[in-house]
Image (cartoon, rainbow, N blue to C red; front, top):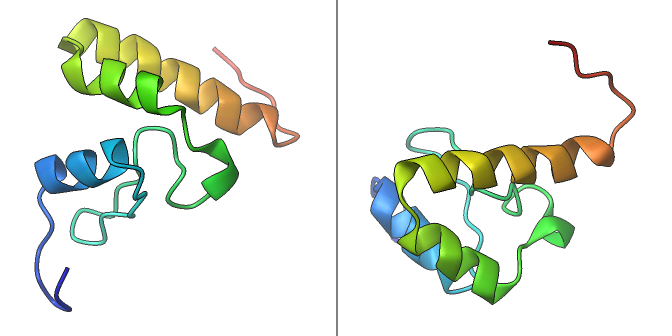
Length: 80
């Protein structure tokens, strides 16, 4: 992507599904699995494809799962 060009959410998602985890600096958003900032968290291709084709409820559940994986790598407490 050219320097200074704004990245759409759809472009970021397509690149992530293709295996290129890019932090969206336009919106300051991580990829769904946070692999743009933690490359070791890159979800397998079949999971990325499932996310792409999921409805909003399924995506929300998957995002919660990705967040759980991220938090397991840190010593922090989740409170409700």
